[in-house]
Image (cartoon, rainbow, N blue to C red; front, side):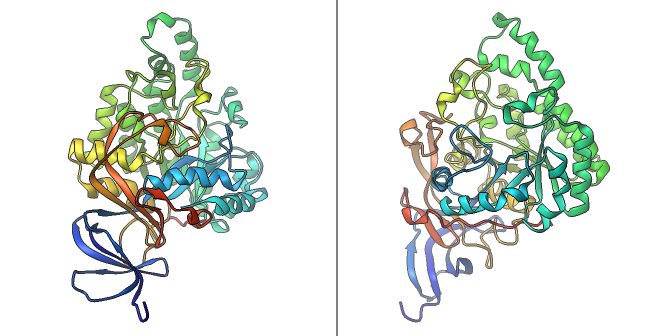
Length: 465
């Protein structure tokens, strides 16, 4: 259209605005950015008019916890198809930005440019990376990773002791290494993201649980008993103390239990700058789930009481973010019994539908609260709020556009992730993603992937506030 004011106009949608209210407004998009929020009857034009009537326009979901790799390896993508397949699942679930964990024992300057290029060639959505820090050379590179790569968030496995890290090819570390990482983060503007478990106690308990197999009603109950909530809580308490002493921000990943929540809240009350994350599977599944070893995850699925404690803390604002801890390993990796099954599960495809179905519809949690945890707070915590996280002029035109009342049944046949399964097999989830936009371009349209979106995702440099 000659003389059009916008590239695209999203018209007649019910839009969740930053103030938390939903209004029937139009959204003007130009150059991949939100150019204007317009009241009906504005009379402005665009080259493309997209009818959103009957739909709710939400900010794009930002999944800040996942693992993107190749085949059974979750350390890094090796070919563009790795990113193309998993971001297909993301786009179908309304996820417009992801931040996977990058795992290596070599300095990241030796491989990051290649990883970024491979990811950009395949990704349908925007992305960042967290770096997993486990060696002296990597620790020495913190300043460079923050300033040159725009990657200010650093994972550390507190459970990598006594050979536990060998499964991922990582060396043992100790609390002094964690404290030194916190010091480097304070010095250079980074943030510590520890996997919190007291592995010495867990290794002791595992032997005891394995010696009494008849004492446990299921494999999931045994797995939980071998890595119980207090080993998670103890590590959070230690991480909170050390990060507070170093004056470093702390992002606690995959909080799974009431005890872990209590430890994180206590750290916050004592002055630790802490962000608390949980995952959908801890909100919906527990040790009584009939799916068996497929539900093996670290930390384990907990009890029904832990599930409800997490929901309570979502309502009360204690939990800041919800992310997936998405793992794309095929379901065949779950074979061999609970002690041999691979931990982890896929989740990007179902993240938003689960939160809408279980949170908004079933528990009456406002959309503004849910999307704060799925978009705004992840953007703020991870240094993306300058471009993402809200529907506001000047930010990227990233949207998850849903039919709040439509339902869809999850089946393994429709799973897009290479995992080939879902913990939500057979669930009817109410709240269906219809369209997904990334920087003004539709990557998932009318419930179908847009093929030309492959390779359009771009690396996002991040800087913490």
